[in-house]
Image (cartoon, rainbow, N blue to C red; front, side):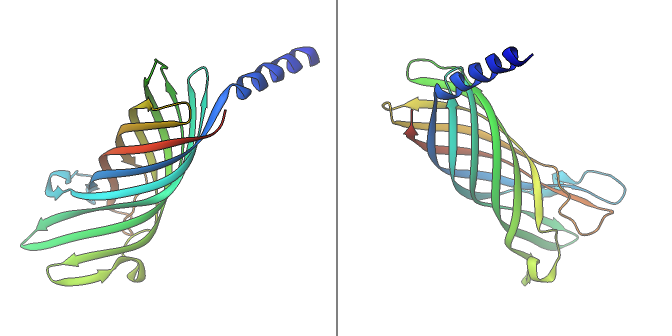
Length: 206
């Protein structure tokens, strides 16, 4: 078994050597909203309207020659929603510190390489405000919502090579929140969103 294990290790090492690591910079425009279920389990999503929000991040990406991609990022993401209910106007504005780890595969062509990336994310609420008519509430200080959020992000996109060291990329993102950010355990509110990302990848090794 030892020769087989050694051969497997050498093959993996050879593949790792045939890889490119890059520093990434990204900016995104999101259409964010809440997915809500009441205490009876009924979905009330149609009552909520989304908001346009921004996000930006810095990250590290590892591109293997056989197409595998691994990426980790840290950044800021805004979220929220609006609701008109029983004659009252509700509004939520949330800002998270986001940590993401993703794996994907790209089909390498000459200059444009399409790919699909699937990432898990963890968000920590930095600040948030709830507006009820003209009254403002600090969500974090008043503990109106959970401060932790996590879920999945599905990102089809494409890398465009400018030269051996610089790539730009664009991707569509679908965010599926898995954490209930409600304090009330009988209700469920989850972050959802769709967005477009533009990014720059600067090679730091080959």
